[in-house]
Image 1: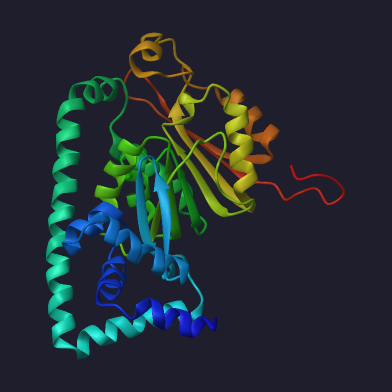
Image 2: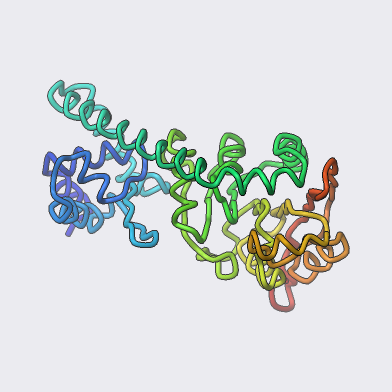
Length: 324
C-alpha cells in the first residue's frame, strides 16, 4: 500500500485522532490511554495496533506494562512529522475536535497527578533508608554542580543516563542534551522517573528498561554516557564499562559518579552494594581497558563517604583491528 494511503486510513477514526494528540504530549501506557478515552483496554489495543502498523506510533514493553509513543518523538520520516503538524492545525480549526482534546488532556492531568501521588507515597515509605545512606556523604547539590561543570566544556549531545533511578540526572541535563535516554532495570524506578520527567517536551526523553551489562542499543549511539551512583551495584564493572564503550561514539564522553573506596561492609547487606567504592587507579584501569582515555577526576569529601567524579573520552577505533 502507498504510505500516504496507509497513513490516512489509520487516521480515519476519531479515537485514533485523539490518541495521536495525547501522544504528542507524553508517552502513555495502553491502560492509561483506555482510562483517558473511557474505553475498554482491548478496544484501545486494537486502535493502537492500527497506529503501530501504519508506523504512526510505537509500542515499548516495560515489565508487565506496554507503553505507546508517537513515532515523531524519535524523529520519524517527514510524512510522520507532517501528520503531527496537521493534527495540531486541526485542533486550532475544529472547535469540536479542540473540545474533545481539551477534555482528554484534563483526564491526562489526572493521570499525571496520580503518578505524582504514587511517587510521593513511595518516597514516604522509603525515606528513612534513603536518609540513612545520604547521611554518609555530601549533599546532592554540590555533586550535581561539580558534574555539570565537568560535562559543561563540550556539547552533551545524545545522553545515556544508566541507572536513572528517579530520573534526576535526566532532568538535570535534559535542557542541554539533544536527547536523553534514561535506562533502569527496575520498572518501579522507571515509574518514579516518568513522574519526574512527564512535563518535559514529548520526544526529549526516552525511558528504557534494561540491564547495564547488556545495553539494548546500537554501537556508537550516544555522545555522553553517565553512571550516577550505579556502578557500585555491578558485580563485573569491567563488563559494564565495556558495554558503555560499545554504545559511545568515538570522541564521546563517559562520566562516573560513585564512592571512593571505603570499608562500610554494611552497605553490601543493607543496600545491595556489590562494590565498596572505587580507587582512582581502579577506575583508570577500567577506562583504559574499555577503550576510554581518562580525562579528569574530582573528590567531594565532607562526610564519611567521599563522592568521586571521573570522566573519560572514547578513543576512536583502531583502523587496522577491532574497535577498542
